[in-house]
Amino acid sequence: MPIKEIECYNCGTKLKKKVLESINISENPRQKKEIIQGKINFSYCPECKTKISHKTHILLSYLDPPRWIWLVDKKHQNPRYQEEFFRSIVPESYSGLINQEMVFVEFGEQCDCLNFILDNKQPQNSNDWLNLGKILTGEKAIECFKKALRLDQTLAEAKKLLNDELDKLKSHS
Ligand SMILES: [Zn+2]
Image 1 (cartoon, rainbow, N blue to C red):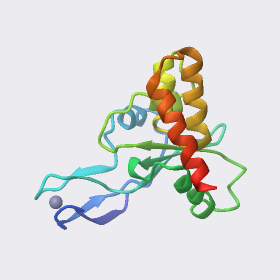
Image 2: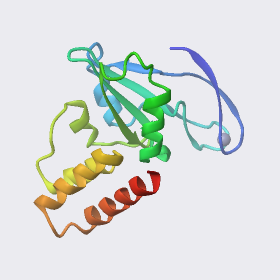
Image 3: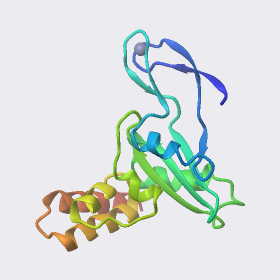
């Protein structure tokens, strides 16, 4: 892991940290637990104790079949960021060849519904669909909120988030 200098965005203190760029989950299956428990990619500032993300995104990869999951800081959760990211950061030669997904998390916080993404499994109840939608953006999030509502039409939060996400897509195009 490369050592990089990170600056606390609250007080400006500089920290030297080993910064993780990517995790190959096929080779390190045990790291899955750490990822779900939110134990990667952050430190606390030694001066002001603010939680600092080391990087805005970490690549999680599977080898067979090839699958890339970008774990991105929650503050970027919107369809535009995702689209721009896939267009600019991912090398052209890879796009289309590898199944890529983007998931938005608060680094340092546990996120149980990451399980569905990492194991490539579908939720079985409305709340899990709702929670899964909350870590995605764009069409993928919309699909999750719709599935949650299909199982439970009274789920007001899913209705609200579905409309919010549709608005984001509209304002974007
Ligand atoms: Zn600080």
